[in-house]
Amino acid sequence: MGRRSDHSRAELREIFIAEGHRHMGDVGYARFSAREVAKRIGYSVGTVYNVFGSYDGLILAINGRTLDLWLDFLEARLDGADDDAPARRLDRAIEAYFDFAMAHRHAWTALYDFRLPDDTPLPEPYAAKVTAIMEAVEREVRAAMPHESADEAPALTRSLLATVHGHCFFALNGTFRLLTESDPIVAAKARVADALAAHRVRLAG
Image (tube, rainbow, N blue to C red):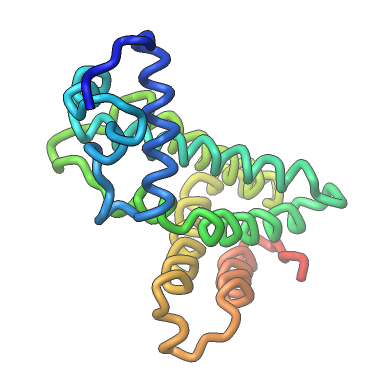
């Protein structure tokens, strides 16, 4: 298809991200094709590189959209809590983690399937999106902890996220089915509750 020129650079960026995110959601990272994305919207694949600088730049933009959606999903779930008890909000955050991953399986796993070279730092705007999710969870962890333990919230948050992520990933890839774990969400909540018990925090359940 011939090259088109009826969109501004900013419009092209948004169109490519939107269509790329749909394509990623359909096929996953291993089968993702920048050429297919360009074909779908009537541009040459060269336009992708003109707009994003590289294939990695396109993937980072698409994954950045997933991070935006994930944060919005988490905040909406927490805003919809039926009470303000910090432990119940943590309970809901765990459920939201699983629900988003399961609803956006390919896009969510692409966040971890794609890696920049070890000597290449994450672009600051992308790193800020990751930090925003971490900070949203840390806010809830900190609120549930006794005041005197609040300075432990950042390290505890990273540990709890790793625990929930591991359970979620095993649920999605079938590992828990092989291990005969019937309810990964309940298992994740139990392990989180174990970690929080040392801080005198009890999850609702």
